Image 1 (cartoon, helix red, strand yellow):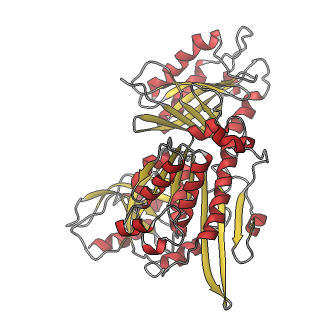
Image 2 (cartoon, chains in turn red, green):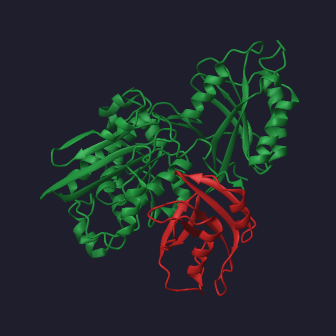
Length: 112
Length: 442
């Protein structure tokens, strides 16, 4: 999956360190040291964004660890291995057709 | 300090491409050469190396020198150093001695190769570097591990394909045992291979318990078994090896399987993992073959992805009983997913539609019907595929395996989806995505 330079630059405004890899027909964007909303602990985590249709979700965001202290009602329905690492994800749907930055912000809204 | 054991894996597709390239005649050199690039990981003190690409020497870098098999310029080494630096790879300098039997380094190899390897070590000192000499049917491979100046021999080299090709250090000759006299058709090396290969079974329910039992009967000495569940009353209609007292005692399924295996094969080195395989991923990565007996498409997709990354052939089995048109239909599948060959997505067994439908039903799966006899059919067929992968006893050409079980008719036939298979190699899991993932900076 290719991304426009503009989308990448917009996403870098939130997370400067971005890289991408493919697995199983999906593209994943690795965001190192993503800053989570206030009250989340830890404040910084690695995150993996899959910006394409996957398992019924328009996009999915996975975290290197489950943050605590921010929205205890979340349904953590993913504890999975992707790209040789363990990731955790919540059940959170995003609308179709979003740009990368919008996608990330909608996902992070779950923790506000 | 104890010398670590080295295990090296390459996909059959990449191995064949490399061999084919090295066999090409050269305008003036009597041998061709190239570089292999690798990633590695240390697991329980052993080092696992995955080969993810092969690059032949640039033609412009060959130097005409009839006194040696192959000579090349410093530019070839610089190219290799740049490549390992860019990807943070390890490397192997590779060439071919075109004969059968164990290849040995020539006097020129002994004199010149260490310097080549040292250059690559200087580029990425935290990676493994070494050299590989191929013959028509054997390998001579030595590597330097990070922090060491000495070359060490590999404990095992696996060419992952159908069938697999294994070479182990310290070949001890044929094992002759009356116990296995009835399965001698599997080949003179079969008992030795069964004593060496590591076979993982993920899920020890109705299917996995059958598989574990059969692997023990055949003589697989190194099973790794993964399941976090305990025996319940409703398991007794199909869980091979489980007793009523296991229900009372809430015995773990791994304990049941281990007990069964050890009764059949006391020498088996059974490794039990009481939990989700994801929590023991590194143990799974050390397997040579995995049989998956899991319950849903998402679990299958995840397990297949991990197996592909670490070059492990994956065999999937499963059964289903459902109501259709006012009658009950029983079905199942046995699928072999071999790195380099089409995967379960290529074969349309796993699709986004199925994954989405399954995700939408989360929490409402109900009680899935399961009985012993179809599990036996599926498990036996899967074990037969394991035997083929290890021994190649049928000597049939490698082909995709997707078998459909019709429990109403009692048949196992090739699934019609294979007729529509559009690819010979898998676009979902390319060769270069093995071992450590290769992220590209955005």
